[in-house]
Amino acid sequence: MSIALQHVQVAIPGCAALLSLAILCAQLSSDRLVRKWRLANSDNAEPVLTATTTSKARLHTSTVYMKSSTSGELNSTHILLFTYTYAIIIAIISLTITSSCWRAALTRHSSIVLLVTWLVYGYRNVFPLATFSETPPDLCKGWILWTEVAILTVTAIVIPAAMPQEYIPVDPKHPMPIPNPEHTASIFSLGFFFFLDPVVFEAYRVSHLPYDRLSPLADDDSIQNLKAVYFRHLDPFSGD
Image (tube, rainbow, N blue to C red; front, side):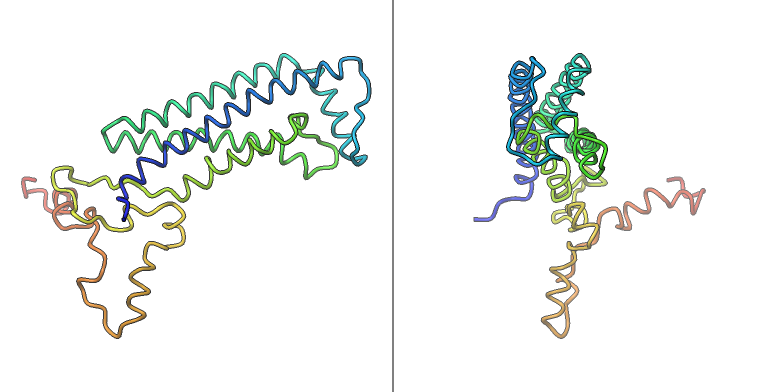
C-alpha cells in the first residue's frame, strides 16, 4: 500500500518534535549527572579513572571550568531548555495548522533553530577536540553529550536535508493535479538533481521517450502565471 506524499510531509515535523523531546529529556538527565559529579568532586580530590593522560587532563580542565562558571552554566542550561521547548512547540503547531504556507514557514523556522543549536554544540564540544589546548566544556556529561550531538545531527541536518518540500501552488485556485518533482524534492535531491533520476533512467531503457512520460511543467513556468506576472512589463498598455 503506497503512502501519500502529503502524509509523509505532515509526519516528518512530528518526528522532529519527538527527537527534540528526546534532547530535552537528555538535557534534564545530564543536569542530574552534573550535580552528582559536582558533589562527588566537591573535596577537590582527583578523579580516579582508568583513562589516558590526555582524557585525565581534559577532565581536570573541565572540572576547573565548571567550578569557575557555575552560574554561567545554569543560564546556558535554561537557554537550551527554552530552545528545545520552543522547537517542540513550533513542530507541534506545524502539525495542526491548515495553511500550507505557514506550515512550511514553521518547519523551516524549526530547522533553523535546531541548526543553530547544532552549530553551537559543534563549536563548544567538537571543535575543542581538534585542538591541543582546548577542552569541551560539557565533557563531564559523558555519553549523554554525544547522544545529544547525535540527535541534534539527525534533527538539524539529516531530516531537513532529506525532507520533501510541500507543494505550494502559485495560484491556490488552480493547483496542479500532479506537481512537478522539483516542487516536492528535498534539499539533498535538489542539490544533486536526484528528482530527475526517474526520467533519466526511463529514457536510458527505451529508444524514444514519449512526451507524455516527461514530468509535468512547473506551474511557476506555465504561460498563464508568467503572463499574469510579467506581461504588464512587456506591454504597459495591456491593462493587466
